Length: 258
Image (tube, helix red, strand yellow):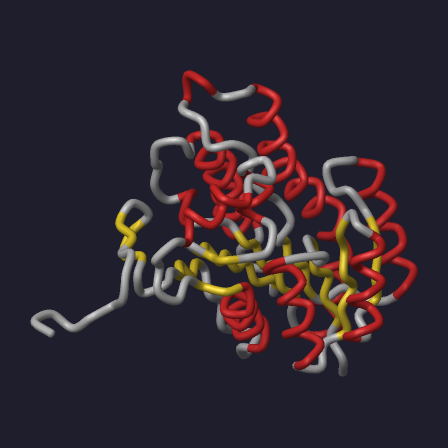
C-alpha cells in the first residue's frame, strides 16, 4: 500500500525538502503552497502532485479538502506553512504583522485540521493509522527580544497541537510536533526582515553548520515512517552551535582547551 501525504508550505524551505524526502521514501505527496509556478517545477522534479492554495483563505482550504476527498485517501497531513513578519519590540510591533502571523500559523492550522480530519479518520480506519505532523518552532518554547509576535503565534500553534493530541486520544491518529531552532533556508528570515539580504545574512553570520531544511525533513520522514504505534510527541532540534533560543555560538566549534 502506498500512503499519501499532504505537505503544506511546499514551494520553499522545509516544506519543499519534506516533499523531496517523502517522495524519495515512496510516499505519494500532494504539495500545497500559494506559488503555482514553483509547485509546477517541484511536481516535474519529484512526481508530487501540485495544488495551489492560500491557507489563510477559508475558501481555498475548503476547496483543497473537497479536491482531496475526490482524488484519493489522505494518510498524513504535514503542516509546514506559516512564517514570521518583523523583528520588532512589543511597543513597536505592527498590528497587521501580528495579525498575519496569527492567521498563517494558528488559524490556517485550525482550518486544515478541521477540513482534513474526516479524510484522515477514513484512511486510519482502513489502513491502520494516520499522521498529523506540525512544524512549529523553538520560538514557541522561549521568548526573545524582537520575537514576541512570532513567539505568540508559534506558541498558539503549539498549544493547538497539544490539545489536538489529547482530543484524539483513543484514535489511531498520531500527532507529531517538530520544533526547529535556527534553520538556514532560502526565504524564511529574508521574508521576516522585509527582503533585507544584508540583515538576513547577519542572522547566520559565523554560525558553524546551522540546520538546513533537509535536516528537518529527515526528522519528519523518520516520524512518519516509524511503526504506527510510535508517536514522537515533540522533537526539539537545533544546530549544535545553538544551545538555547538565546545562546548561539558564532565562530568555529572547538573542544575546550584546544
